[in-house]
Length: 259
Image: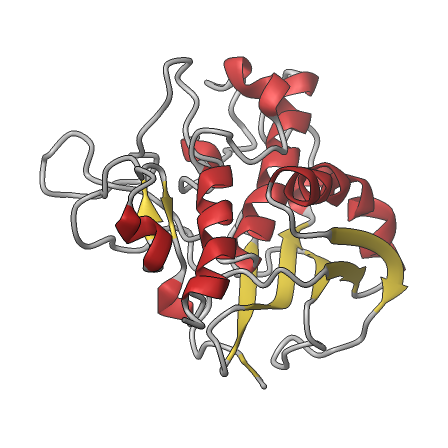
């Protein structure tokens, strides 16, 4: 049976403990589940410890959500299917499961709503988990319609604006699949801050870094292209250095936790 956590995912939570180093292929990782690594963290506070190998499907709360958002889910879904080995299918189906109720097993219901968290620019994932084994069950994704209804919400550069839309969608999908914000105290000042995450040699942070990929929240009145032009080619993709290894480990955890 699924269970929906009593609280919802917020923009940034307090992260305790030091960042675990790069996962090595050792006997320990082969025989024991792992819940965090370089640039990724399992969303265990919401009951998710693993990712099921069985297929997942993305459906929509209404026709508006489907027409606006279906194309944004295809890239990250195909990436997880190809690079993690868990099939995610973007369907045309509609699902009226209420927000306070978990949908059927492995179903992800996408909503297109104005300020779903009551704050400008904030989208939200509401993951559910399987009570029997702690795997990702599915849940609801609430995308803030302002990204599309307000011109240049993220940036006056159209390419950057669209890149950040793609990142926002894939970020929320990552939560449903079991990834938490991997923010950590990089500068060792005793505070885990928004955007404070590890990065690769190219300067790219994990997609699940909060806010999305560690970039500042949008201010609609702002001008300029924003700080993420280097990231446009990776838009809507889980990072190969951080997010994908995390998803692969969550998949491995599914079997390891049965042992």
